[in-house]
Image (cartoon, rainbow, N blue to C red):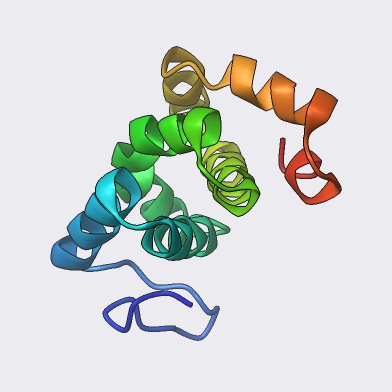
Amino acid sequence: SAPRNCAATKNGRAPCDPATQQAMLTMVRCGTAGETEQAAYALANLSDSDSDNKVEIARAVPPLVAMLAEGKTARQRELAAAALANLACNNDANKTTIVLAGAIPPLVALTIGGTPWQMQPA
């Protein structure tokens, strides 16, 4: 689940404070396998429907694309794809950032040879 500093609101989403966002970015970039999965999961949830979170979390696109392309576990790649899909949904600026960060080749690879769970967000 999302870190505690990302408290739920009526609609289940709330902006994260900058320190928590930075901690999640650090975990995505250089955490253990479990930490990167937790951070990607939290980022996917936070960017699911809140447009403010999508703008704030867009800084995570490059490390999420790296996780998508080079993730050590299938779960890392799946969660990175889910986070990127949520960030792209209804946000043209994030779509452009994701494409420019090089996400298309690893997303295509997931649709061809990934697990069913990986193919869904890809």
